[in-house]
Length: 296
Image (cartoon, rainbow, N blue to C red; front, top):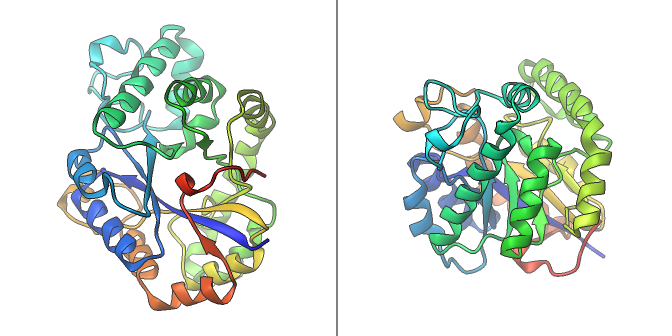
């Protein structure tokens, strides 16, 4: 069996520049999947572009950090700060979950509001994942499972890298290696949640790809990394997480570190060389909506 690979672009709908970059990558033929942020400023534009697009799967990129909520802030007691925003990051979210019981109810309300907004837009999601991988938190993952059952969504990203990801280190520029090692270490720490995640997914009959790549080398994906990845993929379904984009004034507002790297990933995903790599290695590119029964 040849390996199947789903290349997914996260953050669809965050800005117009990200929407345009994902569209260009999709037109180039390698990118066939993206996840949509219901709370993104360019949500409506993304829906217009990708709703009903043949051969392309759109999922939901659930957000519980950094942005404005979709549900009314006054209904999200303990979750939204005085600035009207969700917690700044996963650690802040965990602290809120641990110190305030109403937060779990607010999380459920916000996640359902995001799902309903996407479904009401006419998009039929093929899968779920989350911004900053916060669905590794059991209290969040349980809600995503509930939403998946409510709307008959079969696939949720398992945000844990397979063993061997440290092998990408030689393929990175020297300036990126220290940050890669930090991200790799963080991915090892988060792996303590994996047994609980897999147990919940198994009981709920949720499907997950056999391997999800791109966590440790987020921001550093290049052709050498993809070449090595082609040799590592196992038979069955795998996922590569990407963040293509075009840097514009909207994106600069977020002050995130993924700026120039988004442009480089976009250029990589539209290149002829990347397509040739997948063809040479007999890797089948798909989206979650095309996969019926495969599971690791």
